[in-house]
Image 1 (spheres, rainbow, N blue to C red):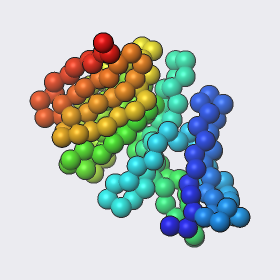
Image 2 (image 1 turned 90 degrees about the horizontal axis):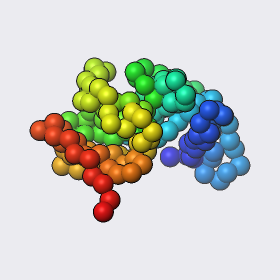
Image 3 (image 1 turned 180 degrees about the vertical axis):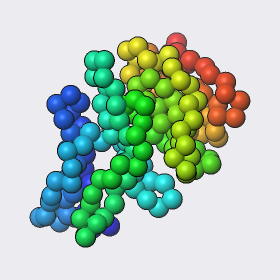
Image 4 (image 1 turned 60 degrees about the vertical axis):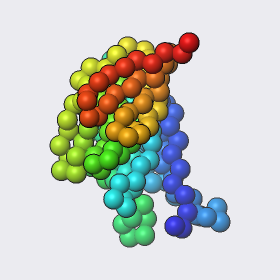
Length: 160
């Protein structure tokens, strides 16, 4: 309401999160963090952060909150691998695609592995996700992965 949170994601070269006032005259660094995406849930601001590089893959969901009129990053939940995209499903669960898997995280922070080892695990690099009518579409190299939350049906959609 009083400015902008801006994330700079530079992969293995690091990341920064800044707040800049609406008039652009005031700014401060919030954190050294590899924020990949912001998301709102129940009126609160969250983000996914982390990095998959080489044999290493780690990340978390963080809560972005104001403390003493300044934005801070607080870890909400550690993830088993680096997140690349996040959405909220019809039951208000976080749905997170990571470098290796597809996860559902409920309001009690319980992680359910929808797909423990996705077909994207080797060089397909998922980068975006939408959920429509309980069907997840994950965009990545070479195509789109489709997953139905109700039937658990999986489909790999390829361009013609």
